[in-house]
Image 1 (cartoon, rainbow, N blue to C red):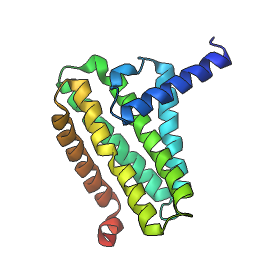
Image 2: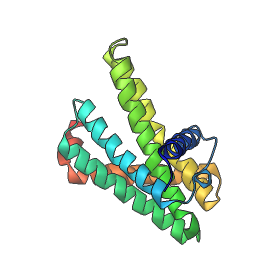
Image 3: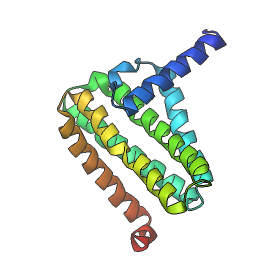
Amino acid sequence: LPQSGTQNATVLALIQTLFDIVCLRKGPDAIPHSTFLFAIIAAMWVIAGAVMTLMTAELDQKDFFIGTLTGIAGLLVYAAIVVLSGRRARLMQAIMAFLGCGALLSFLFVAGNVFLTPFLSENISSLVMTLVLLWTVPVEGHIISRTIERHWYVGVVIAVAVFAFQMMLYSVMDPATTSAI
């Protein structure tokens, strides 16, 4: 069994790699193919969603549930694209990249919301936080394009389509969201 220090170093290296993917400097191939890391990343994704729900006044348990389901639906679409493109061997790393980068961006959203709102107007901090969440589209485009070995623009088009699919699914699952927009 790995020692605690080794596990901590592994987790820190993983977070650095995910940060590099969020910054579009690395691809999902930089994440080791590991069931242990997959479990850590999946837990991190669920925890990030829960923290985001708890720390955002407008969100509740229903939003967490629907957000989790739409997130899984998006992952299934990406998984189908990876498999249909003949890149099945890269699937685990791609899923870990999607989940891990999503978790990092969610934590960044929460941190920004907590630390920016007291110093900036609510409108400016909301704009900044919206931009953080919208950054998921180019990040996911980067991940899928690197996974299926296509140009980044192809990945962004795929990511926009998956984002639109998730928004439609969310509005079907929570029709009140549509009337609020």
